[in-house]
Image (cartoon, rainbow over all chains, first blue to last red; front, side, top):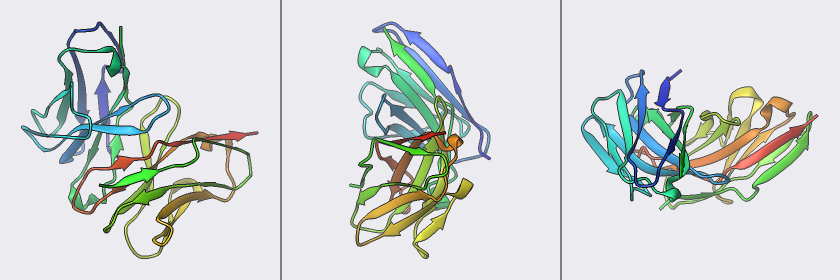
Amino acid sequence: EAAVTQSPRSKVAVTGGKVTLSCHQTNNHDYMYWYRQDTGHGLRLIHYSYVADSTEKGDIPDGYKASRPSQENFSLILELASLSQTAVYFCASSRDRNSGNTLYFGEGSRLIVV
Amino acid sequence: TQTVSQSDAHVTVFEGDSVELRCNYSYGGSIYLSWYIQHHGRGLQFLLKYYSGNPVVQGVNGFEAEFSKSDSSFHLRKASVHWSDSAVYFCAVSAPNYNVLYFGSGTKLTVEP
């Protein structure tokens, strides 16, 4: 089973501050994703990556940057955190385009912006 | 653009009951359809998926889903639920060779004793 670990698991940030959420996977997967989950809603795709040193925009990229320094690591960066970015963030990975799009998720990072 | 809708935000049943969680999608071409489960405070876990072939697919823990092209649906079913099945269930859709999933809003299943 794929292992995807996120850190921190929980964070309180101040408005205007910088937040970095980190994700590490140990299964040699090509694809990694960052999703956002708001209470009572589904997941929305922020950024994804299919190779190291390259990232792609998802559906809601505004206010977020992503970094994929290696195949194993994928970070989500909030340069200027805002109240509206309070949410739970999930990282996920998948093997490749032929994997049938089975995603393996981390446990989530709960971010509260005050 | 692919979209997926889950019309029931909440479903409550008793242990031992059968349950069907509904999912409808909108997309013109071939797609992957899948279901994921999220227990409280946890990440999502894959349950099952469909791309082609037998429209009824089996998943883990007695779950199955049936694809219907005419209804644009992929409903999830279980014949006899257990209290541990209480969770939020997400339907997801993706196009082949496009490794991005789009999720529905989720259905919270509560199984009462």
